[in-house]
Image (cartoon, rainbow, N blue to C red; front, side, top):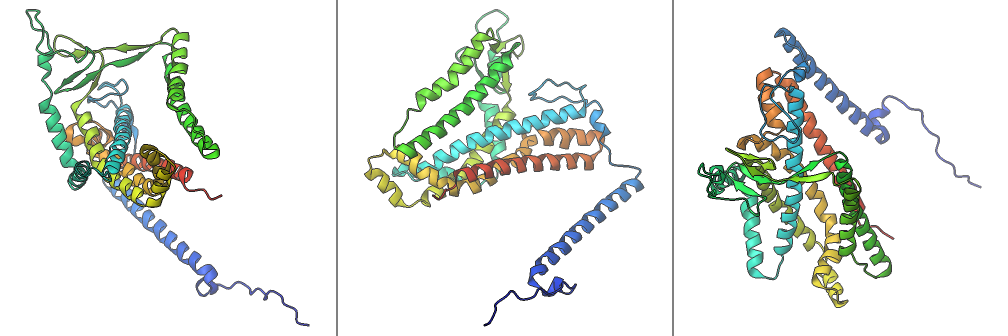
Length: 408
């Protein structure tokens, strides 16, 4: 009788690193890794040697020195006597604020334009096509300058809101008594927080998260039972009731400060500068054109039979889009959408073109020029944008995995 057994294992030899396919790929990867390490080591040592020859070294002590310059858009208190580190933090916060808002509004513009571009209405479809082709084929810097010029010249001068010396009514008044559009920006009410106000704020954030949790529950219940639970009224209750209860229990610690015209300028309220509005809007409409194409491609990737089958069941067109088409289209939309969010974050560095002081304008601009620490500032800039980009990719990839098709 013949007995089958595994062939005897040969002893490992050095030559097998190249001749044996089991080890060859690891060999080449190790060689490539060593080449990269040696190249980086050479560049770093050459940099340190050149700095030593010039009597310089790598140091971040300059971050503790007074900055000596003002920043026009301040999400946190700041003055010219604060350190370069605080100026850097303010610039980073300005970058994050405009990037986050632009991602949200660009997504809204893109989804609306992408869906309407597939509309059966010829006029609406062509208008969306014109929007997409015009805005995505002209550089964002040009749109930024155009929008900034328009907003700076279309809005009324702030002098028209001043009360004349004779006490008569000014030429212009606040819209509904709470908002003013001027060539220096938009003045809107500001929330003020007393003791306990942050508890109300975090309760509001928790309520928003609760809405998404309830929406997920409604969708799972619909798919499991075929019965649709009410959404909008419970969602409104989740949003309002906990925050209102916390607001009343803590003694109304949150107030509203309205902008008021002083002798020469507005006092109180929140000023959204023209540069901030221009950058926000330019990034939104420019990137929204690319997102619109992603949305259109995702919808077209879904078989038309899905829509016809849903319509045969009596589902309304709006519900077909939200419950049948878009959930499946997300698998095609999200991967390129990640790249658009990354582009928004990186394109925000163009803010200095309109005078908006983001991180590139503070750390990579004034701080770099004042201290002469170009290498240190550029390394910090690279680290910041790399970190933000990786966090965006991590979150979007997690979301992409959560909406992918799950086999039974």
